[in-house]
Every structure is written in structure tokens, then in C-alpha cells.
Length: 324
Image (cartoon, rainbow, N blue to C red; front, side):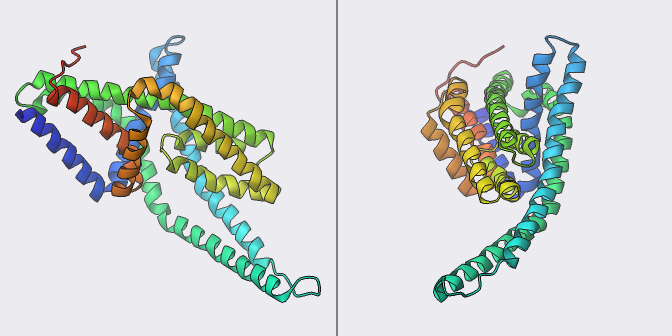
């Protein structure tokens, strides 16, 4: 095995170790890297009609605006709605009467207390993680803005990272980045559809905060599996406060519709040609990385898989690299 092949493995191992021991900082940088590519999608579209610099500014404003809006609204909504639900649950009490057996009323009252404690526990956990998430959010925004210069710096100095064949090493990194860019750009289309579906259906069924729910669905859709869980929390809370039990059911139905459309229609059609990796391998990879690295593992699973696929082709099988 050539020295460059060993060097690339060392880089990968160091990256995974950093992720393991500094998940919040590295996670913020990775998310910022994602968003730097996401910004290029509307910018490329707008540049066909208006000045390229203006299209970039508009794209930055839209994507970062949605990111900041979703983050700043998420915690206040979850905390406020959680307190309202907790207060309503804690005030409920079923008194004994002739029509309801004692054991039934006791069971319902105990269940109510458990739900109240559960709701309060969720609020306390969210409050305890808020400082870390705020720090992470600031890093995401800074990284998103700065990553353009970072990509230029890496591209300029990429050859110095290799020994045997610096040009091949540089083109390997370029090819890997192109693979990752295709994946993210495909995911932008999927996320946009999911956000529109959630936002429109929430508005149509008069669930409070429809625009927020649509924006949050778009932003979190880039996080496999965990994204839908993040949206579920405010969706169910807002559904409950808007329409009670009916709103809760409507919120669940909206999320199921959006998730199923994404899983069976949108993602397979848009992403299958981009990744060219069997869907089962993708799912298993995401689950393994989530188990090893937690939340950040979900984000790095597919990029790592793309890296390994490209590495195997170029340095194990000796495939020709793309010199474009």
C-alpha cells in the first residue's frame, strides 16, 4: 500500500476521533459545511437570472434567515407550549363518583401525574442543553459564512497533504467533495418538498405556527432519522394547543404523510442516481454511526461512506481519478 493511501486512512481516523471527543464543536463545523453547500443551490439557480454576487447574497439571506428563525423559535415554542401542557395536565383531576369505579379514577389520576412529570422532565432537559445548542448554533452560522474561504484554502494547499502523488491526492479530495456535493444538493430538493408539505398541511388544518413548522422541517430534514423527531416535538405541542386531541392526531398524520412521501417517493427518485449505493447499506451505516458517535454520527455516516467508496476505487482498485 502506498504512503498516500495510509495517510488518507490516518486523516479519516483522526477525523473520527475528533468527532468522538468533541462532538458539539466538530458537529457545528460539519453542519456549517452542509449549509455552505445548501446555499449554493438557490444561488446557482438565481445566478442564471441576476448578477452572481447578488444571487449569493440573496441565497445567504434566505438560508441563514431560515436557520436563525428556526433555532430562535424552537426553544421558546417548546418551553412555552410545554409549560402550558404541564399546567393543564397538573390541574386535571378525576374525582370518584358512582359512574366511574375507584380503580379507574385512581389509574387515570396516576397516569396524569406521570404525564405531568414526564412533560416537566422534558422541559428541564431542554433547558439544560440550551447553552450548548446556542453555542453550536453560533458556530454553525460562523462556519457557514467562513467555509467558502476554507474550501479555497484547502483546494490551494491540498497537494501538500500527500507525498507519493500529490496531484492524485488533490483530485481524490476534489472527487470526494463532488460526490458529497451531489448528495447535499439532492437532499436540498427533498427537504424543500418536505418543508412545503408540512407547512402547507399545517396551514390548511389551522395548526398554529405553520410557517415555523415548515421551516424547521426543511432545516432538520438534512439530519436522517433524528430530523423528524426534532420536528415532532413542537408539531405535537402546537397541535395539542391549537385543537386538543384532534390537533395531536392531525399533527401525527401530517408528519407520517411527509415522512412516507420522502422515504418512498422523493428520496429514492432524487438520491438514487446521486449516491449509487444500495439503500440497505445506507440505513445500516447511519444506524452504526449513530450508535458509535450519537447525533453527529448521523450526519457523518453518508459522507464517510462516500469517502470509503471513493478511497476503495482510487487506492485499492487503482481506478483512474477524474482530472477535471
